[in-house]
Length: 168
Image (cartoon, helix red, strand yellow):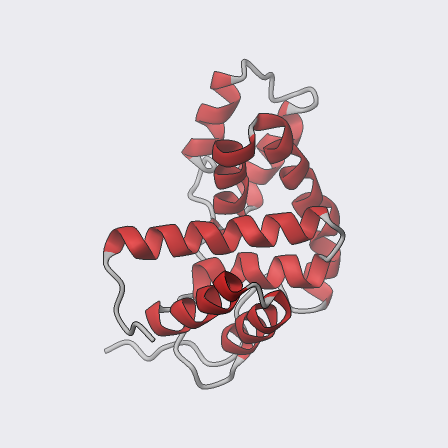
């Protein structure tokens, strides 16, 4: 298993994991989808490689199990969820501008809500879906993220639990 990934490979793995999570979310597999979406942001190279290896093998259940286990393990080092900057995520504003959407009406209102509340994994899921499947599917993912968030919080699938890395 690869321990250290080059920047482009790591980015592709993170996008692939977020995209797989978005697909599971759209199929109604909420816990599994959010587990992969969070893992796309929270895992470091070795764990990310292992989860992607299982996805590449087609073993989705094992990939989800690993993703959840790694993101919620109490002693493994994880990247804390990167929340949206003040003013929201710029890529979502650009997406709205490209689609000429008003933020006060649907579907723009959904994207505005997401821009101010999504962590980086959720943002990645929407953006990579837009890139690979088009705006209509990306909007479905955005709506599903907002709709199922209460369940994600209930199951601890919206944040990394356990000890945070020590800073020196």
